[in-house]
Amino acid sequence: MTSPPVVRFAPSPTGYLHVGGAHSALANWMFARRHGGRFLLRIEDTDTERNRPDLLDGVLDMLRWLGLDWDGEPVHQSDCVGDHRAAADALLASGDAYWCDCSPEQVQARAKERGGPPGYDGHCRDRGLAEGAGPLRFRVPPGTTAWTDLVRGEVSFDNATIEDFVLLRSNGTPMFLLANAVDDAAMGVTHVIRGEDHVNGTPKYLLILRALGRTEPTAFAHMPLLVNESRKKLSKRRDDVSVASYRDEGFLPEAMVNYLSLLGWGPPDGVEVRPIAEIVDLYDLADVNPSPAFFDRKKLLHVNGEWIRGLALDDFLARARPFLPGDDAAAALAALGPLVQERVRLLSEVADMVDFLWMDEPPVDDAAWDKVMVRGKAAPEMLDASTAELTALEGWTADGISAAVERAAITAGFTKPDGSPQMAKAPAPVRVATTGRSVGPPLWESLAALGRDRTLARLAAARVRLAG
Image: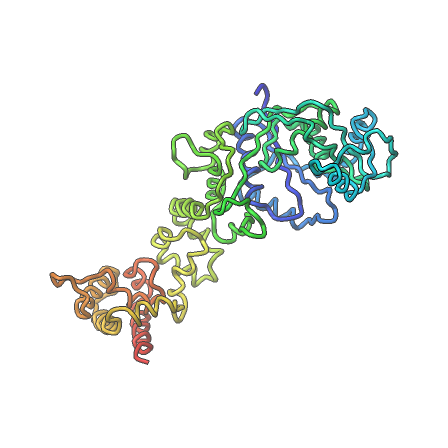
């Protein structure tokens, strides 16, 4: 590149930010930041019936949350409608466009009658219809239309396979392709980086620019399609695709951009979990695999867990705070902070890890109760022995609690052949009785934080429930 690149992301204020859109936005942002270019934002708001300002705010908030800052003020496409219409007039005047009065039903009927491929057949090309007859169509010339794609290499389309597409609707409003091409030229966009679903529209985009004599982008990069575990395109109806929902679930923005960067690309040194600043220096569109990329929630959870464990403790506590119900919960988390941080993959999992500390009674997991207390080995004996040992315990420390429960295990019959305590299953009744669950932070530290009186009270309550 002889000059810094200019790229753009163009969301529509008709819905939330989709993970596919975020993937494209991130690729644009990283390309601009790596090469010292500009990352512009254009709001494609010409669909007045579906536009909602509140949805636009949500999209911008998610870009900010991901850390994808843009350069300058966002351009609103609705402010450029006059430019779109002027371009349409120029194409009409040059003979590259013409008015058409064919209804969709007529187009479909003719296609059926001729037995060829569906689509418009150029019926009105030479009829010389006046404005108002219907939509304005582009006159596709013979030949081929080709471009260099940084992801897919050289791409070429036979123009004979491209129908005379619509530039202006019957009501005079511009179609997406016309507005996109005109606005990109006006904004000086040098590289168009977007999803694979735009590949088939690219030759039409280029035909418009060439007919207008406008400067074309230097290159295109059509990013891989994101698919689910069934290898089907991510769908709003079927899959969780809202970036906001991932934020609300407790994913970190650092983890989200880290994972999105890995879709269709991998770092040359194999280190996947790393800061975005490092990824920007390594990311090359030429290394992106054009094949569909699997949006793997399990891997995203792994990446998020790694980022959570990498936070400073104070930062972890601060980020978890919005997912907790109040000050008592925050204090409970502080008591077990490092132990919880090592075990959660989502910030939304934090509350369930420590809720037994702030609630009067622990929320009991019925499945855990049935498995450990009802069908498990010697639960009543283990509760009785633990109660006796913990009541007699001097002091109340994690080490002391551990030793007391080991002695209780021997008394309750949880022993190895050599007579030593078998601690793989012995503490389970104590954990379920005191925390309500069979999994959680280390038990000894949990009981130390819970305190002697509440621990003994919960053991007694569990014993009564078992006897009842």
